[in-house]
Structure formats: structure tokens, C-alpha cells
Amino acid sequence: MRRTKLETEQTIDNLIKIARYHFTEYGYAKAALEEIVKEANLTRGALYHHFQNKKGLFLAVFETVQKEVGEHVEAEAARGNDSWEQLIRGCRAFLEGAVQSHNQRILLIDGPAVLGWDMFRKMDEKYSMSSLKEQLQLMQEQGLLKPVSIEAMTHCLSGAMNEAVLWIADRLDQEEVIEEAMVVLEHLLEGLKKKNEASYS
Image (cartoon, rainbow, N blue to C red):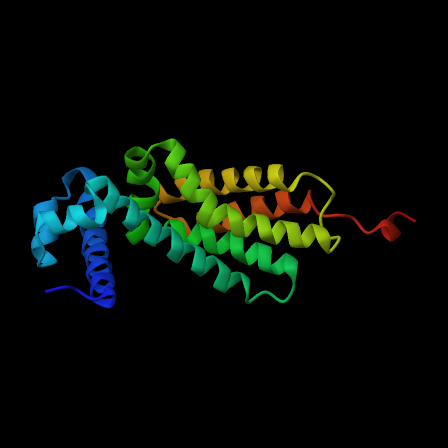
């Protein structure tokens, strides 16, 4: 019987949900496709039809996690009263979201190893850097930031936060370390702030 588009989408969503649990719990290397398809009540053939292979399934899971973190960042940023507070809130939300226990292994450990550095960076640029770049561009247009390269600014800040996430994830006192990282990030961002010319008179 021919499946409807909605049924197919539900099947894919369910498969990604189950696969996410297995990749989180056991890691990519130890996650067994046999167990994933069994739990999803599918055949390996059906899985291969939708995702081609285990790596393709992992990529779908990875993108799901990236989207969730991105949505969390945007939601938290939107709570800011002005562009500057939105940027700070967004940075904090990224650190907090990426180091969540259910995201760590997929985003920080298996992501780069399984997908390869080039694909990992493309995904990071698509789901994390793009919103950061938009915010920085807006702030520069509002006269809040120095007239330096937005592209360079985005990559430098994104790189700093990605490295901070790796550091935070390895610590037991994560809340305290996030605070330490945010203090440093705010100092870095202050250096990009355009000073009011009136203050020099």
C-alpha cells in the first residue's frame, strides 16, 4: 500500500528520534542499526531508502540537534531588551544548549569524527553562524559595532564559543564555568563595541 507524504514524514521523524537516543546513549560506533530499525518497526531496507546508510541517519540526527540548539539561541536572544542584550543572551544560550548531556556526544564528540571537519563546519555555519552573522550585521548597521569585517567577526566569535563549549563540556562545574566563559566573551565583545564619539570630547 502506498504511504502518504504525512505517513512518510512521521516514519522519518520517529526513526530520527529513536536513532538520536541510540547515538546519545551508545555513541555512533556502538549504536546498532538492527536495534534502531527493530524499535522503529522497520526493515534495514526502509532505513536505507530514507537515509542510504548509518552516516546519513547520523547526519539527520545531527541536523535535528543543531536546529534545536539554534531555536533555543534565537528564543533566548529574543528576550533581550536591545540588540546588545540579545547578542549576550544568544551567546549564553549557545553555550548552555551545546553542553546539555543529551547533545554533547552528538555535537561535540561524534559530530566532527563521523561527518568530517568540512561537513561539520558547513552544518555549524548553516545552523549557528548564520544567526550570529545576522545579529552582528544588524548591530553594525545600527552603529553599535566598529566598522570591521562581519565575516571575520563571525568566524572569530564562533570559533571562540565552539572552543569554550569543548572546555565547558569536560568540566563537572559547568554552570560556574559557563559564567567564567561569559565574562570573557563579554569583554571580547566590548572590544568590538563602537564608542560614542561624544565621550571623547
